Length: 271
Image (cartoon, rainbow, N blue to C red; front, side, top):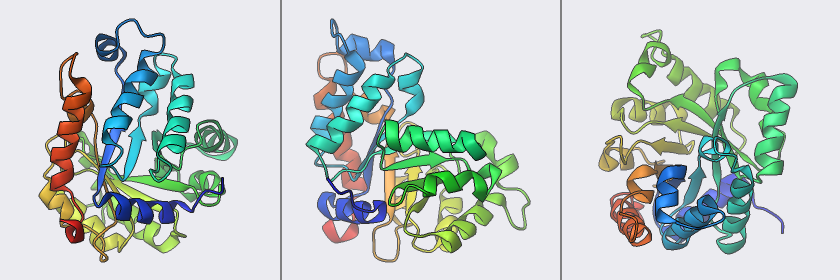
């Protein structure tokens, strides 16, 4: 199957879903085992169940690699991404890895993301400069999401320095200048003023926006930062959706939580 360019995938997915919702897949093994007792591969089965009940609502999925690799479940991550591609081919998969290195090491990280896991996009830390990003961009048509302004409280001392021209805005401007239809920026929803500033600096570059779930970001403020065509946002929530319910009703509760957030992050033309 010939894969569309990542930006084209996103445009099609926004049109299909009518919203900005992205479900983060962060399978904590202890909590997953409670919901999938006696399963040989509980992480894979749990994530598949979440995907099956939310696929019509999302514009993307975002598995976080650490939750798989920490419990030796890399094989489950491979199988999960393959499952999404086969069962819901219009839904892009953004691998949340936040890699950041250069040279041959960056080449291997890119190979891992795009060849081993077959992700459509991967999150990358740009701190080492553009030479560290180049290996990911060599995979024509795949996406690269650059960490720009994160949602954690202690990030400002670096990302907002120097005050007169903070690092996160320099990243946003540089990404807009160098974009070839493959770049997006990661900007936390917990800082709405900075999110708006990134939108102004980056033009219509797509923004991956975590932090609207358990971290308390305001979906309405995020929606106001859509691109000029009314799209351009991927609004991600993880724990508030996948662990919304108890043991017996986890799938139904996940769908209900996803639906509530979806309604808050609909694309305006689809509202």
